[in-house]
Amino acid sequence: MDMPTALDAPARDFLKALASETRQQMMTAFAGGRELTVGEIAECCGLGQSTASEQLAILRRGGLVRSTRDGKLVRYRADPASIGARLTELQGYLACCCPPPSGATTSKE
Image (cartoon, rainbow, N blue to C red; front, side, top):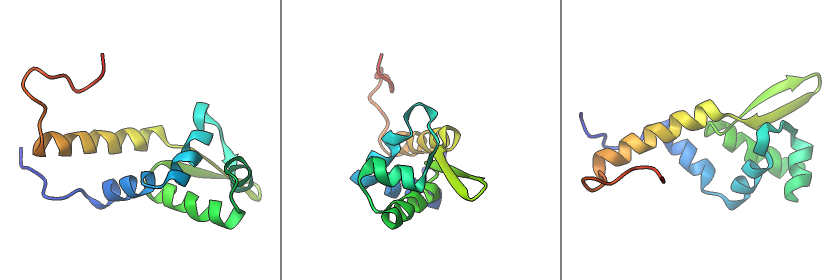
């Protein structure tokens, strides 16, 4: 297996999206598969609607959320398939550059 020299753009966008405490807080609002509008996210997280909208765009670009239109409203929810794909990619990247010690497990048991 060739060692990757850098993460690809989607993986970098994923990490950038998670790098903000505000966006981390927003992600917890989607727990349990909740679908929320920009206004609901703004209220839940104590943000202005324009700030919430900007942050949701970063989360969407990072593959953490997806949106659907419901009439005039846009509803957002976590995107587990995309999140799983990015995590698998990151795990593979890290395993190439810094593999776990022999006999170590990669998940909590």
